[in-house]
Length: 134
Image (cartoon, rainbow, N blue to C red; front, side, top):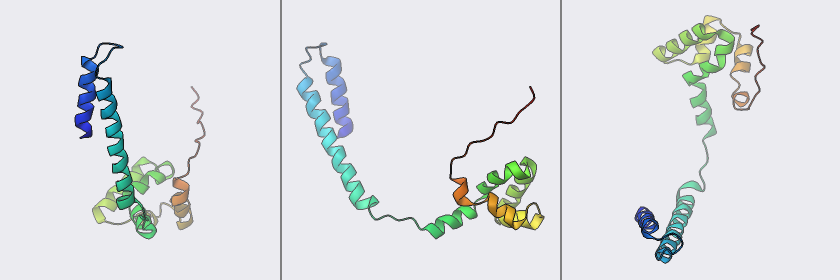
């Protein structure tokens, strides 16, 4: 209905004459009607689908900790080659990045925990400019 009324508004705007558009009442009706329908749709969606939703924090944490994407947090410390190797191995062996980093002795458990601290990863940080000597 809203898409049809959008087309109606478009055609009315095209068919009108500058400031003397005889289709303005139709345009107004269609726009206001569409706004009412969309408002009702958002209210219904909110009440029936959004309110009451809570994240399963433990499940979310487990998914993040098991993600191969965590290797990106290690790349600045380990380097691209080692990080890439760990990521490929984690994917192939279906193991966590953290387990493989510890197994290969690339970092200590304390260093790894500091780099993979989830709360620190989601906070904005400012990178220091590196002098290139150019």
